[in-house]
Image (tube, rainbow, N blue to C red; front, side, top):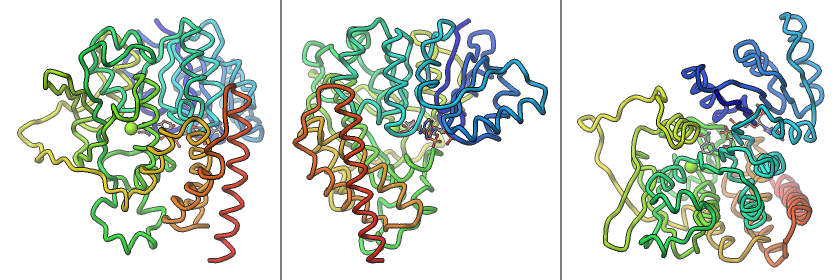
Length: 401
Ligand code: NDP
Ligand code: MG
């Protein structure tokens, strides 16, 4: 029986993780859960999974949850609030596995703490790795933690890698393992064929309606702009110790192949299946074993054609920016991620247009791309400066609209 802590339990990845737990009560026990402010969802999870501790980062939400738990007669569950409580949560000795599924750079400190506490860390929160890069990987190497990717592409790549590379995540070399390229697939999102002149009028509801995956709102917008693939490009660089030239983005609208590894001898190994996040989550939770994830078996007789193509940077300027950031260095990556979080939120609040996201991202990245970062305080400082610069740009655009 392994003890589990789910950070971001009320989100899409949290929901899918807890579905795996529900199917395997003999293997996993929920020790702790965390969220920001969705109290009703967290209350339901408390009733079902009976965690020992819950952290609501938002203090009002924590008070409301305490009241609700008293009303429902659940007096044993400890409810805490704030970032510090989140960080303490992952250190608990009963916790063996930490699912890092907070959205955005807010997940960085607790995820890093889980690594330092030698846990088995399941990384969904790609922004944590994008914003801190080498610092995160160094912390991993200084610890006895195990890091496993949850992002479907990175989990697919991991599955296609030889054992020495799986064991040496973040440090083993593809060149020593007969690999020539990592092929990162992406569907192209809901606007793959939309005429470019209509991009200005895209609404948040349209951007959040992904054709193949059901996800949280931020990553859904990132998928529509393909910033998600850009963040994944940077994530792949760190997880698999790659240079930007080792990674190729391949459009694959059906999302059946979740990514591939190309070997020197011409072989291409792909991981495929139905687009259901329970597959990578179950893979990582049980690794190196395999368990039932409740996913429909793939039906080859009903599958559509497999299509492949190249991503067009005019349609997806955010993907271009992220690849440039990956080449430029940590300052560019941290600033780009922060700007993007602000711009996406402003788009979701209908304060800016869909096409403004890339303009804000480009401007902020340009301002901070030469900043050197060598410690976590440096990451946090740049993150906050870049957010501030992005907010200023949002305000300027709002005045124009
Ligand atoms: P959701 O928006 O569905 O969920 C986010 C979770 O994080 C919620 O539990 C939310 O709490 C919590 N949260 C939000 N802000 C904070 C904060 N400041 N401090 C602490 N907790 C916070 O996102 P997803 O589940 O879709 O995505 C989570 C992560 O996984 C992202 O990094 C995403 O890129 C990655 N990912 C997601 C995939 C997917 O299929 N959804 C696929 C691959 C990667 P509350 O509900 O209270 O707001
Ligand atoms: Mg992904």
